[in-house]
Length: 221
Image (tube, rainbow, N blue to C red; front, side):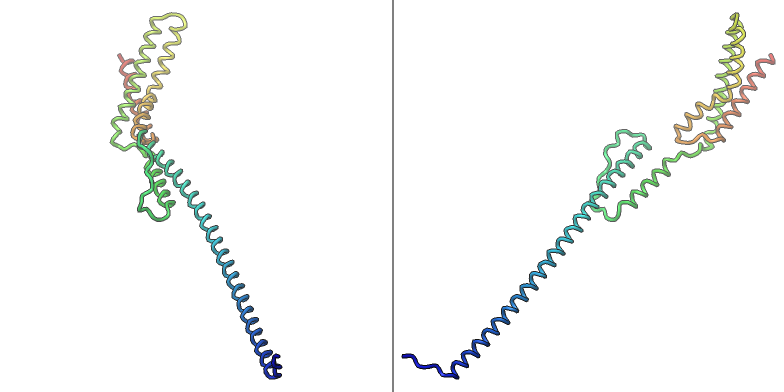
């Protein structure tokens, strides 16, 4: 038969069981707390990673948009440069340099301003004044010769031609000082310049002087 358990031994076992139960409960609570903290930390890490991914995607999208804008601007500026140089087969625009750094927008703005400055036509220099005078003299001479031809044709004709051709000859002769503006304009276009009032007055004055001289020589004979 089993020996009866003493009251002291039973009480000690109860106390020990209570202590073990309390210890297990504390450890279980500590484990739950640790688990909750780990889950919260993992959730925060996932949220931070998701935010970083979202920011990276936004930066990639912005970078792609900037690349498209830069490529479009480079193509446009390259076309303007080709038009300025008058070279159709200039090739494709250059790609980005490998060691390029910094914001490309200020660089493109500088290129655009440079093209605008170089593309603006200036005035004709004073060195072309002899050519302008030659345009005026040549235009007046051509108009005067056409007028003489029309007058001679009218003299040898009859009817309305005999009346209309001398009038036409007079109009052509009077327009002689302005005929030289056409070659003067071609000269300005070749030099990428603007035909300002100064060269226009020079052409018209030389043409007018030539026309008056030819009229004086013709009608004083």
